[in-house]
Length: 556
Image (cartoon, rainbow, N blue to C red; front, side, top):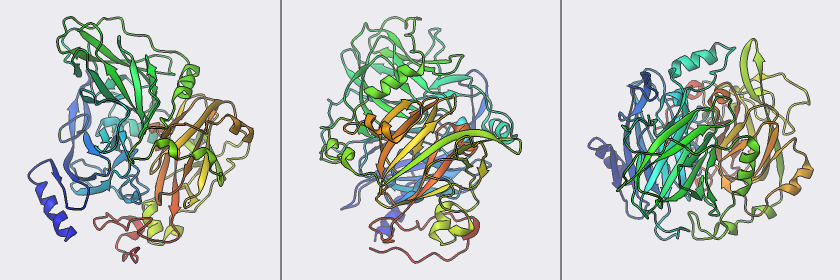
């Protein structure tokens, strides 16, 4: 019966780009049809090729509620393979939908694929983006919000409106040109050409249309995500303070800030009250930690406003110590409920015994004259057969080897890099400590799919076991992305209770593309539907497993 209903719902998609349907006894289904195509845009005044979704840049927002089922039918009208990744969505028991080359075969040109996932037990602000090559440099990204269910109290009054703010650095070169630069071996893609806010930049000549409007005296929620390629950005509202309320799926202690550093891949939600003189104001995003600062601006307009925004934009902070101190001010709201009724603080992560410590060191060097980035001396390459498929079909030993890197990191002073699929096996439900150590001169931003983790510390210098005395074991924010400053380290805690194959990567696109990523395999020994879903019936197969009979399905 369920498959009949599902087929009927898919037929509705022929009539509309979005449909909503509720099946008795199930959470609501949201259906989307997305046509991915090339188009021409000129956000920095230079015509360039972009990747559009339904003709839009950025792409459409997905507005969902905890436990909703999201169905996205993606038609690839490009001349090359395509995948979408849902950044921050945990896909409980369902890494089949993660949209990475380690979990999915690409969607071939001229065909379509339907993603089916549930935003299970999550709330917060996220985004999606294309995960192959440097497609993200051409667009096809958009906001993805998960609202709290009506029965779950939110620790602030309902805002007047809820806005998505996608900030990011931008290049005027096409994604194919940028990819060729990296493929040529010896060069970086260098610095970006500008900063965009929702795909635009205000000229400041009086002709700009507002990105957002505010009614005097009302409070608005802004969901801010850095969807860029390599630059950390500082965001500020001219003349207005921000109250931080949520970060990557967790309610936070509601501190006020004049500006926020948002590193690549990160998302914050803030409340802003329209309590100033009614006129235009600038929303400002500027690059951090690079010599020549780039500034992007957008207009926020009071509905009864008279007068342009002041040309004097608020100054950004300097140096990374300021940014580190801001990180230390972020705190988990222990009394607020997230996706479930119980308070966030009822999970006492600080009292759980660590079963394994994994130390990860990022490095960069040349291999046969070509630039490569690595983790613990291994630069990841994607095999033709997705890692998850190879593992599920029992041919993993023909595609990759587990644990080719050491938990202790590479030998001191080692600069050699090996090219290979990088897969770490972690025992199901183990509580693990991961240390990220950055001995480079530039900032790093790390993201883990399938999970949120407790960001217990970031500190300068090198990590040692004695540093654990400085961990925040009470109210570190549970999130999915963490920055590591130059010559510094960061520590995270998490329980690996979500079976699947999960990508851990640098969010800096150049680093990731050239190998600074790995996959974490979390296998349930029970091989049960209680722990992991079976391979989808619409799965695209490629590589060694194409044409192979499906393995025996899991059962309860």
